[in-house]
Image (cartoon, helix red, strand yellow):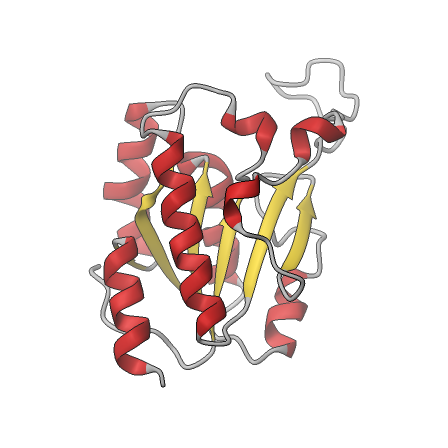
Length: 189
């Protein structure tokens, strides 16, 4: 569904724009994704809206194709650092997740609810994993969801396209970085 509105208290969720993940190949040039995420973050900050920067650090001890031994996966600190290009500010809320979605076991839903947030704009990587999982959990927690479709990427073109065309329109609204910034500017002082 195309972008129609942004609630008065909307937060930006920037998913997994961290050094270790950004070293991987991606469908869209990662420099553009960082640039657009930064533009969104700057616009949200300018309008006094919450910015949440999310990174992933390891994963739970489970048996899966990615973790045959059933042991916790730990990512070195050098790989979990958020990229400098996001312009991190003291008022940004930082969430470190240990699953694909940023709401599981992090207190993010309570934090956003405490700020009166009713809608989230989601951007980052990987479109079909961290972004999609975070957005699905946001919806399940009662938040309206908007996707900044040109500010996300994936390592798989097929997975990226599937999320953009089949999943996201069922979870929330979609728009470009510029459309979201224009709507913020038009609806806020």
